[in-house]
Image (cartoon, rainbow, N blue to C red; front, side, top):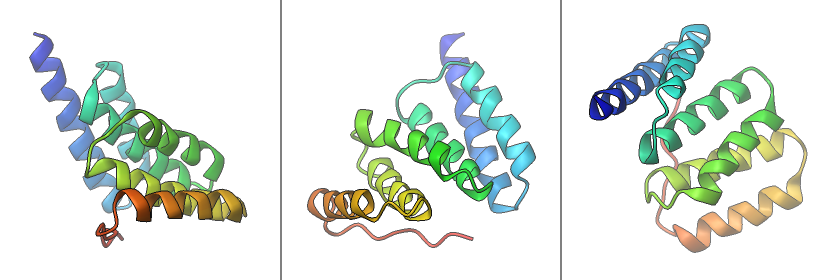
Length: 122
């Protein structure tokens, strides 16, 4: 049963990402919240925090977005998700006009993931 909950949470995360890409933020947020209710861990939880950050950033709430990205930056070592979270954190900090913090994380991204390239997003 525990495994099933993990797969369900991961499926909801995938659907939420797809819905965000289709500009259906309301349903993407519902899927993200439903996934969180299943208490996922590890990579799925990190992906959910990035999705929630992306939703907040799209809604114009850069402060909430930054908080979600910081969770991933601070507590996950995933080599795919952590640089994405740092990249998105930089975007959120720039929207808050916090250039000093953005520069700090830009340097961290360069130091920890020198060959990482940002994905093309809609």
